[in-house]
Length: 180
Ligand SMILES: *[C@@H]1O[C@H](CO)[C@@H](O)[C@H](O)[C@H]1NC(C)=O
Image (cartoon, rainbow, N blue to C red; front, side, top):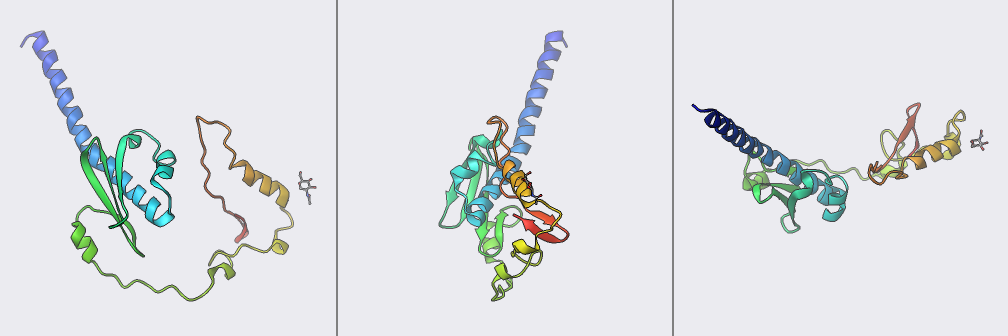
């Protein structure tokens, strides 16, 4: 085989490998995007736009096309129209990526969902529930003003090219929730 022939063969092999590699990667990219977007929209209550400009604002996710369907509570994702993946939200169960089971099989599944207890969770102290410690129990060895300042600092965006995007902070001390 001539030198040109060898080089051409290598180029064709690399090209074929590249296509094969992308082919394996596409369903993962789209599946990740569909599941993430489905949870964000139907569980967290984010808008598609919000999610696109925050968590999914990265390569190659920013080129994925999302289709949000508020009728069947699903999100489909595809990169350049290839390898579309779909995730569906089920009330009380969260979002699931359609993978081994079909969509009909997933919708046909039944679960005995626990019933929420009839209590106000805001009155039960952390870590069992939501209640933050009252100010009068605040540990005396911690300066609350300084702590609050430190927390506020973590929400300040100093570098527009490296956003930190802090969503929430919870400070636990001595098995107590002291700041949130
Ligand atoms: C807490 O820190 C602030 C800021 O440094 C200071 O002004 C204040 O005196 C401190 N409070 C206590 C109780 O030490």
